[in-house]
Length: 593
View 1 (cartoon, one colour):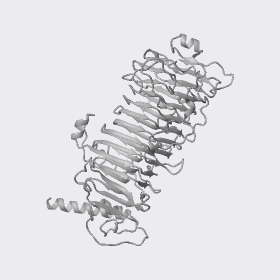
View 2: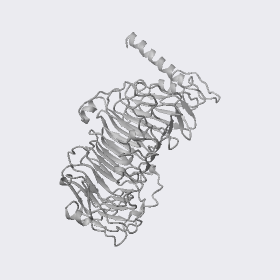
View 3: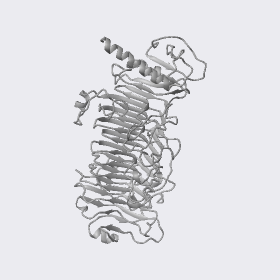
View 4: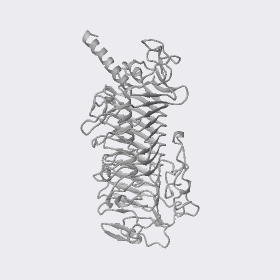
């Protein structure tokens, strides 16, 4: 290293140390002090009553996040914070701390020790730039492969801090082609695991209309250091964690989210709970789990609830609780999740989202299956824009879309564009006051089908009607609708109506015109047609639920839905409850086989 570089490197270390020390406020506990300048070994320890002159061993721990951020670490190192203690400020693990760039197969582990969880807590507000910001964080993982963060609490601590934990890669370079081999050669980082953490309170310091915040962010488009760098990232797993605000009206922004330059690969969100993310009125937020720019994504066994409470008309176009977005997003699976009690405290005028699950704006080759949703203001499922080659199957929806408007439907197939291929919606069970599907577009990809679904209306609409699923004029050429069942629990109801282009007809006329075939208006005889009680209890971290709940959507003997469905190729092999689904021959209508 030449003299100028050595001086520059030393100055940078001093600046980082001074900044981090300024953020730290030490504990009042009696200090344990042994003077040392280097860590005692590959494992370093920190406690609120430690001292940064100590050797950072378990018997003589150091004290501050500033000290932790100044060491250099080798693969396999552990960074340990004493359970029950609070460490104020921010922590970063980047190329300065890991000169080797890390080892995907020998992770650096950041964790609590000694029983209970340590808390990393922010201690100052950030300052916004123009329409952005404040671009600060509690924990930053940058440029480093092989990192595990586990068993910690991470808190904004009442301050305006944009990101709780953020993963980015400012050491990689952008590759325009969404090609794994090319991006691997461009400095891709691999294998970051975040497990059993509790991250809360992170948000924007609004107004910042062109930005967002998150409890956990995977930033293929770097956000907080060297913003705009597009280093590729592979295999990030967020597991068994809680992301949340303090109350339902908390202005905490998003839960677990991504930003991208078409450079995120193999991302998993499993066993997490997202709640009390109220968002900011006039700005946005409130998304539970969100992927964009991801190839091969999995969101399973998560529970997202009580989101979007503060949102208004400004934020109508989104958000959703668990969803994927962008034409550079593909091979996403959303399965075995529960979403409930999503939506604003006051419903805005007109058509809004605020729903459970969504493939949006060009997502392709993806699947929403085996999910439960209930009591959400917006739809259970939306497939929007040019999203195509997607499958929506074996989901159960109760009392979704209850706020009405033209999003007052449980399933909304709304290509506001030209899909490149078909979509497949089949074997879903829907119960509620707006238990119907909306085909809200004039064109669909050839081969689009809507089959084997059960719709049970529990109330009449404001005009005193109950409605079947309806397409817009001109859309039926590529859309096959068949083998569905419609029913209402309302006593002495009027006849069901099916409407298209402003005109409505009865069921016989509807089927006679060829809009729908082999469907029934009949009681499907579920164990409980009312859909109540809708609330269930399960533990996402066990990776087994929400099944077998809710159990009352199963079919009784003698149900007209038994054997009345049509077989669908590549049907997934199982129903919502795990029962086998035959590949050929007669199948049941609805989510139960």
